[in-house]
Length: 171
Image (cartoon, rainbow, N blue to C red; front, side, top):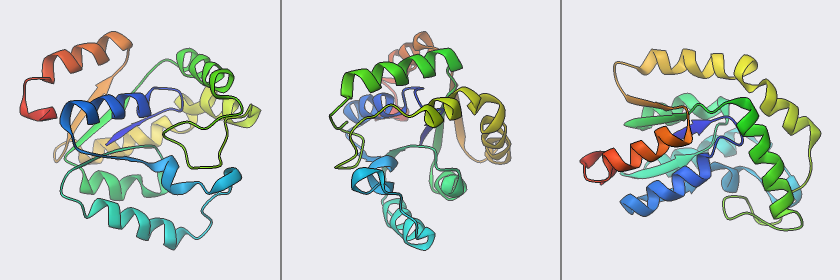
């Protein structure tokens, strides 16, 4: 399970992990959003969709979605938190908005073209103070049951792939 702030690199990391392992890759944004940025409003439908995915024996899943984070952690053996600086995350979001404007990303639902969204940028900037403490609290509850890996820089991510490329962690 790959989590972290928007712009932290979750989808890119998950694709790379998928390539290294061959495990099924699930992007939560692709499951949650409907065309034209319409949210899944039926929370029971959302939980059922995730429950079906989590029945799989082995998978990589990326995305936050706090309301279902606990159920995903319970089903995971490993949680990777990309804990990047907020300036990096906001920069990456702005870069992504410019690069994919008028187009779709591979990790996003069909019909959800990239767009400038001031509220999303503010949410990302505030993630360390508003959302991350809840994530940290949840991870603390599972620290004796699950492998929890925190990566705080591009260098740590590269070291992760170098270190684990020949071990069972990513095979």
